[in-house]
Image 1 (tube, one colour):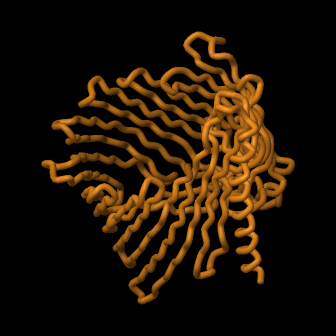
Image 2 (cartoon, helix red, strand yellow):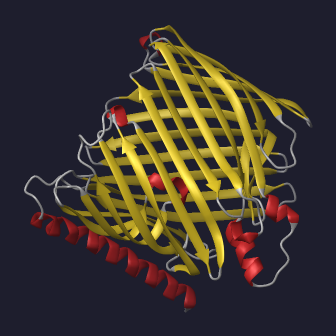
Image 3 (cartoon, helix red, strand yellow):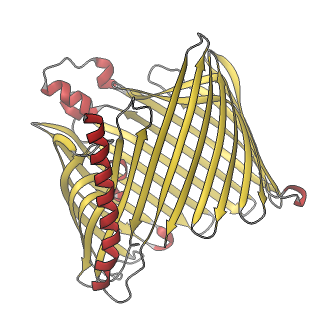
Length: 448
């Protein structure tokens, strides 16, 4: 009876969310007459797969996943605001319990001439990046547009609440999250943000982090995006303070036919919650857990449009994928051609030469697609030497390279009217010791 009860509870929560999404537009009529119109989408996907191993053993997988979102776009005037965004997956074989992720489910209002924002519920504060998930309340104050030169608005906010579970209803026990942020906004979506996030787990400080983001565009010829996290205290009282994550992406385009892009990423992934739980329960925290998963990547790419609709690129990267790996070199050449010779075919491809300590190899990708009529687009892809993310408790994730993998994929997208899209994808993967066949189908309906 327990699995059935879990399904009924998940179904009940889904129905409740849909009812709230249906009632909210009616409540919005009490706001300003010029209130923006809500929009959203509902998608249902089925994922069926079979993996066959050399030993003659096979494993089947059947999943039904649903996602739904419905919200009012950001408004400048006073009035009601609301949003709903959730994911649900059901394992048809019954091996795994149902998973439910409620990313957003909030109701709030903007007041004081649009300068005061209040929200309550399940929130995702985009100004805080990956640390922005919270169930609680937030208050934000926005300045007048003319308060600073070259700044269209200054926003400052505070928040407090609980930590939602990732794949199920409810909240993480004894965990509280609170903090504040400030954001400076300008023309062409320019934004600089600075935030402080504190996560308390019982009597310990699980995380105390300063987050920063910077998006700086200059016309069409230059943009720079940066993001960083700095731990003010040792995560769980056991790891290390200091820089936890840094990303920078710079693109320079002197002309429409030529651009140069450079990227640099450095960081670590530490299971701060696992460290904290072990400390509270008196379990030994190993040095491997404290160090976590370290990674780094630095490189650049040059892109040139040699003919109208034909673009070539070449790049070089230096990567460190896992804590114990030596840095590896990755050289890539590729290109894209749209409507080749006016046949309607779109072609793209790339070839990456990876030089690892265990030996060099090529990772190749080729894709060809074509629009058939006004409603149907079909494509086929072939890729080799895939990279797989493998999750572990101590390191978070480990990048596992598979040089001898080949994957062939065919897909079709059909637009039925203006609101409905159908998707069908068939995927065949052959690796050392295993073969995998996967069929993904789905339907998306856009709410306007």
